[in-house]
Figure 1 (cartoon, rainbow, N blue to C red):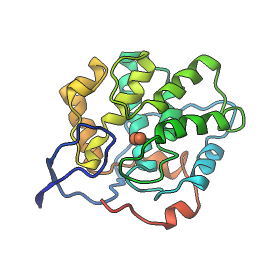
Figure 2: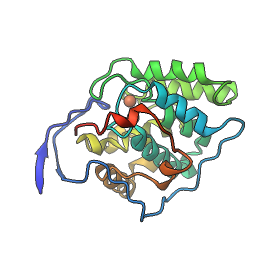
Figure 3: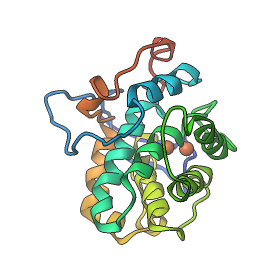
Figure 4: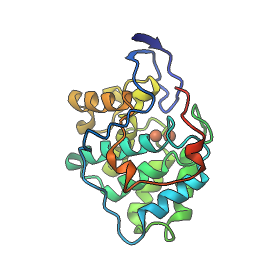
Length: 223
Ligand SMILES: [Fe+2]
Ligand SMILES: [Fe+2]
């Protein structure tokens, strides 16, 4: 069924009405392999980090801004990184942390800065990162909803990776709102948009990114 939706999320201030096809609320397709290799993580267990994030997350784990969104953001970033030269560790932690401190699924003023500050509290105990890449991570998280275009290529790639997953919130990514040439390619936008509409969930959600806890028990986000 085709119907017209009004955007309900405000990741971008350029929300506009689009026509979308109805898809399952949570399109985890285990029969389709992930396009991306497993993430690299050194020093500290990714599972411990994810579990810590989940234990404090205030919204549905599988919801609009939850872990499947983070997984797509990470894969979007990896797909861009070959061209942009982005730091892949920064991409990973941005994906996991930029929305980790949301308190609602709509316009959540300040959640970027809260995520950046949360990253600072976890650094050293739940993940390791040198000062320069951490500065990039902090900037990427803090300003990811500000609509900025100019920044370090790693920060730009983080922002593009997030904006390329806007279709799940009934917002089409627009080339003029993307930072990098790599992200503005029509075929890349189409690829990411299709995955976003389907609520695509990579297979690593069930192993490398597996967690347990009450956030999942709150069920699906209405969308
Ligand atoms: Fe966000
Ligand atoms: Fe996001």
